[in-house]
Length: 300
Image (cartoon, rainbow, N blue to C red; front, side, top):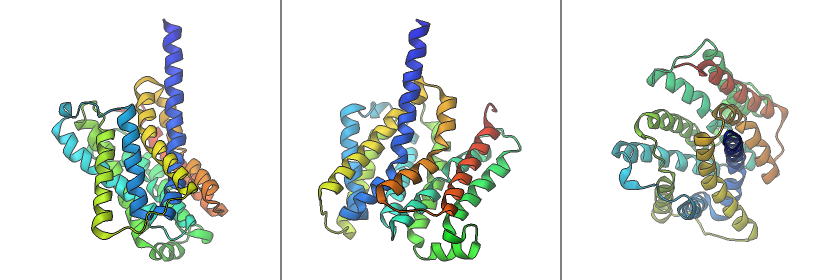
């Protein structure tokens, strides 16, 4: 019995690690879909297909049993984040900029720790301050381009496309808030399928109301669409299995390497070379998030 339990836990942990790989592929895949279907149309298609996949595999989880606050507040935060994430990448002017925008979004682990301390009474150690500062400086180094950690270069880069960078930063704040709030109001429920459906509805409404360009399908776009939908939908499902039945410590530690893995996969998918300053900044984001995690690990 004990051996079977250990085997099940290892499989669940492996499933959770798979979720990290799936999520890390999202930036490059969303960008590829948006190039063919437009920022809004591509995002709407991704969440529509992902919703269908989740309905067929996970189901809705009994919507009537969900706490009302979780449905309203949690749903609004989840949908807002997903819209910000998808459109920030889709509106990027270049593939390199799309990867940079994704890195801004990965401020959320450090922000989540800060919000947990401020609003949830989470105790922390002295590492929280240098950890948060290091993650923030890492994003600044990424945005500095070839100049690296340079305030003037960073501001000039952001001014080239404030909408994309602004949406990415807003998304990081929103997701951090979602993680902080749902810990108190979800009561163990998982509304990911419903929230994906609502995200698709919001994006299609935007597409119909404001226009989103022609949906020009080709082989590459279709393949990337299916992969992106599967990565996003099944990523959430796989993560849920890992968190419930696997080694949470291993999964939490591994999740902080998503920025580097995401940048590597996006650069591979998009064929966008990245300078050493970018990789240094990505490593700083990872290291800062890990320090924040260590500062709160095992504390209540």
